[in-house]
Length: 227
Image (cartoon, rainbow, N blue to C red):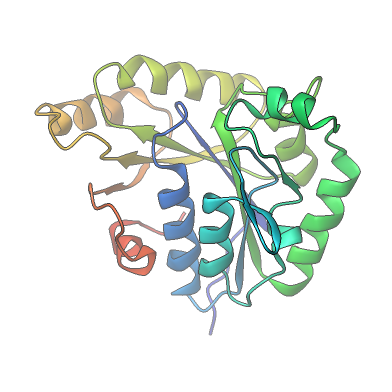
């Protein structure tokens, strides 16, 4: 029998950009799939997309699409694919588009109709806007989604993680847990910082992802507990 989880969507955010959110999000997809659940990944707004014969495509969104089962349409995984590799707010301005929350919801609803859980990966950190006047939290709140925080393990992460967790909770969200992401293999104090984070953050650690570029997300899922 498939596992039962108390959420239909999870929102994955990070302490910053480049901290391994996509690795964590795809691993979460596979972790939930191991419990017999149908799981879809979503990257609502993505900048830094490449031009392909099929249109603009984002590497992170493609990874989420590939991890999903059943495999969703790319347009639903990534409704807003923006070319310029900068903050989505600036990339949307450059593209001359406004992010429509209604369009995001329609895409999410199509994913949810074919999956038990939708893993939604944000862009950048918690307070990085999706567009002018549209925070990531606005979309997460409209989904009723609890939050998983990805902490990039490096010098400075203790403050970034505490500030992010404080903001998430202050915004009225449930912080379901956090994931440590080993982004700097030379960071000698990783384990000591993990102990500090476990003491400081108001949510359980769901696991620590190793530094393993190109690793199979299904294998990375073995490092995670069920959220």
